[in-house]
Length: 195
Image (cartoon, rainbow, N blue to C red; front, side, top):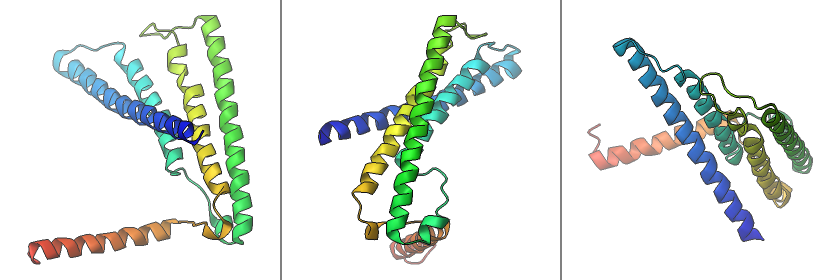
């Protein structure tokens, strides 16, 4: 069971990073080509703006899935940092459960909306593709995000309260400064202090 869970996690990671990367690269490239065509050749692809928006939209939603994986979304840890670790763990477990419920609800209602769009046979204005294709990002990305939060919840449940570590911006800045000092020392050692 654990290996299936890990395999599914890797698959979600691969899909998320691939779509996010492709979406941003394709969106920027398409926007650039359209601008060059408009100003250099006095020609514009009428469908390019719409497709660019879809690329960026898919990229953003799947980048958010990746942010759930690395736990990079904005959080306010002021309360959990200043109460006993056991209470912090309970609060964090509750917050993860609430997040999972919210993400699953958005995924479910996104799927319901997708079915409505399919029934209405709605198509995009410029590309004339079925609108369920761009809207499909909502149920998929939110379901993937719920899975990522579930992973964090499982890890949190099995982490003893006294082993919980909270990082704030101050700690991260100090780590960066410490790392910069080490990098400078390494460069000085390698170059003999010439830089």
